[in-house]
Image (cartoon, rainbow, N blue to C red; front, side, top):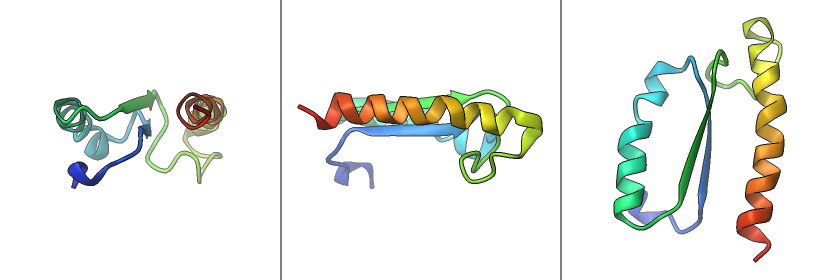
Length: 82
């Protein structure tokens, strides 16, 4: 599946999402092996789906969202405005 990726990838992950986060090291390794760009970012304390449930996790999801949006805009500027 990763072989079909043609664009740079930014992954935004809640630090408390053990199931999904367990897949990140293999994805990093495979994307590098294929010469593809993959930037995973974890936000400690945030849970799965933190962008859709910003009121959750005693403020950790909201804090993660506040960091994720500027990171996303920066990623787009870096990779799409070339």
